[in-house]
Amino acid sequence: MEDLKVFNVFVVFPVLCVLGVQGVGVKQFPPCNFRAVYNFGDSNSDTGGGSAAFWVAELPSGETFFGRPVGRGCDGRLIIDFIAEHLGLPYLSPYLDSIGTSFRHGANFAIGGSTIRPQNESMSLNGVSPFSLDVQIVQYANFGARTGYFYHRAKRSCHRSNLPKPQDFSKALYVFDIGQNDIAAGLRKNNDTDFHLSVPDIVEQLAKAVQNLYDHGARTFWIHNTGPIGCLPVSLHYHSIKPEELDKQGCLKAQNEYAMEFNRKLKDRVIKLREELPHAALTYVDIYAAKYELIGNAEKQGFLDAAEICCGFHEDEIQVYCGHKQKINGTEIYAGSCENPSKYISWDGVHYSEAANRRIANHIINGSFSDPPLPITHACHNLE
Image (cartoon, rainbow, N blue to C red; front, side, top):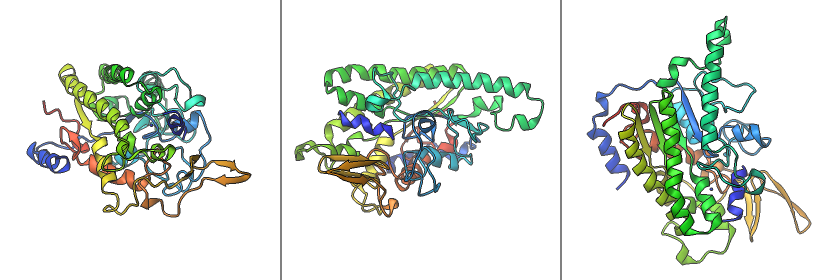
């Protein structure tokens, strides 16, 4: 997907947390019975919005599970898909997709290349989407108003079947999975001081989005931090790297430090939001830790080395991204997929494979990487 272009210029944990789940006595809380999910994000959770807006979805993406391209930057399902499955809900239809869509159980506003803070860049230049988080929130507001209008004026029940029930908005789960492209933008500018100064504003923009949704009735928020961007294989394949630049897992330390700084400030802001929004339940999900643990234990988990890429051609400084063709020294190279994607953590150098997404989703869904340490089925409960 287009997020790939951004890299041309620069997208005591489980045990203690599981004990924490037991400590808060999850059995005393009833399941939340979410009837809808609304998601805001970038290509890590884009289920086809970017494809509807900017490009034609093509194989080999989607080949593992769907058997056809469905607009995901993956061979199959994303973490948001596994979340929907776990909650007993259908996969989220992209807000921008006008064909074969149903919004009865939520909508997906995520678009590949999106940022929290609007960037003075473009999709054609470096893969940055114009659908930044503030735009996604405006789209949600329009979505709620227009679906409500048609729902109440429908003369037959069949005319309402693909529309959300107005009473379900306040009972829905609101998911945020965005921030990686803001960090990539900071890396492109190659100015540590500017990035450090920008992080509080980036985090505040996300907090404003949560506040906006809360003001419109949203009450349950599931907020992912950003993953270890320095572990993405596309970064490791793109230029010569000195050994001292890498950490114990073979990831670029400087890039991961950017992500960790963002995550620290995001967690602090989520904690503050709990005071500001007393009727909300806000869960901070440590996606960084979940992904980093998987990368560090790749072979034990049945994967190849985490730096290996399933789909794409990345050799000798030559980058041909997944599903693309390029002539090199007179020979056309097609960057197809590997024989067994389930053995790879990385699908295309930037996005994770379905097998990796499944592992990560299973770990976060049960609350092992969450604050508070409640499983997603109980995320509507405010423990404050």
